[in-house]
Amino acid sequence: MLSRLSRPRVLTLCAMPVLALFTAAAFAPLPFTIALPGSTADVLGKDKGRQVITISGAPVRKTTGELRMTTILATAPGADIDLADVVGGWFRTDQAVLPHDSVYPAGRSNKEIEKRNLEQMEQSQDSAVAAALNHLGKSEKDVDVRLHLADVGGPSAGLMFSLGIVAKLAGDGEGGDLTGGRVIAGTGTIAPDGTVGPVGGVSLKTQAAARDGATVFLVPEDECSGAKAELPEGLRLIPVETLNDALTSLKSLNKGTAVPSC
Image 1 (cartoon, rainbow, N blue to C red):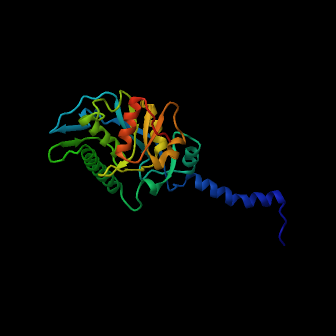
Image 2: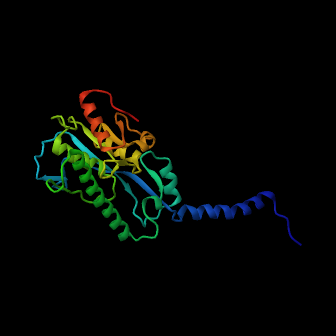
Image 3: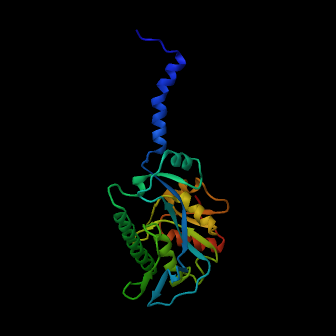
């Protein structure tokens, strides 16, 4: 004969497997990555003691202000992210919870991921040089541009590299300084024809930019909504689709004429 259990007892016993499941989930690794605002670097200046942009074969202008490329800092590919990390990240404005595979390709080792990121950076630098020189009507046979940026991977600095090259070679194209003495930050891939592409993580990059003194942020137009999500006070967003868009907007900003906004 089976004895009867009181209802509270039954509910307690039924809840135990669910509680065990949540307890296990709280400590089990989850397929996410936590991202934070990363470092920024002035492409017109030096990084770790070396000039970021070095040009020979053409006169180089003296520049003022700064052009800062921006990054995000993500947890390492093999880091264990548990439920507490994910929940905490969702409720913080200075963090983002991203699917692991959106940051790190599945099935690749840490060394393979690092190699891929460095290759993307090298390709981005080549495209940035080509875009800048194409815009200026100059040939890579006559002008030698070398780019150096330590400990940064990926393609998202392309736009800022191109702007830095143009600033050093031609200023704003009208005898002035491209930055107008401002601290200008931004992000975006770039193709040799000057097309600017999206990169992701823009809401974290705007925070990094504001932290490091920027008052203007150049963002790929398709990512305006993401950039506005957690926009720091005092940071002006300017959407761009091409290198020419960025240059035109910065010239207009210096003249005090109308500039597009997100």
